[in-house]
Image 1 (cartoon, rainbow, N blue to C red):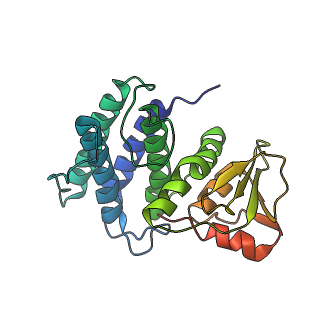
Image 2: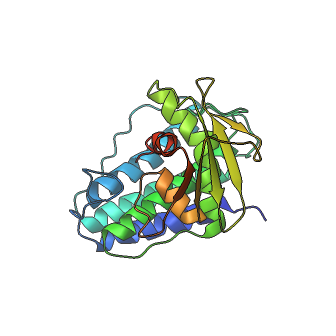
Length: 243
């Protein structure tokens, strides 16, 4: 069954806004060193407005002139309004329609925004709820979708943006609760997914939620991401993740 990314996105934007509204603005965000909850709210709201600009212009968006308000309630309303407008705009576009986006993924179609923004909101909703003392989680199939999106969309984008090359090695990632496996190879200078049964120099094994969080540099709260094979190779690949 396919995921309804727009429904997931709407739910996570609302849960994120609730955390921003009810939690202390100065609460530190473990997954984004140096950020507090207020900065995280600014970040996600900025992303929503950045995507809106991209959808309007059909190209790289200009800077928006809509800063987040200072009060918690006003900042939460600002997050909600930007998120709602972005979701409405994404919903109105045919997912197969050609579009501009900055990700090195082909074909460049509008459906990418649904998945990308759903995954963005999901991890940052987790960040926000954890920052205010909650025990957040992510639904298993959605987390597994996020692991796939990390390899196929986000890691290529991060490396291209920072003009970095991936490790010149192979890594396998296995989700122990859903039976999915990816093998990524960096020997060509860009991350390439091989057949899922391909051998790898190192293997990471964990449930989907813990794997997604670990790839993005988040705490896994006691759930172990097990490594077999070359530990140095595994650590090098894991070091690529971030906020």
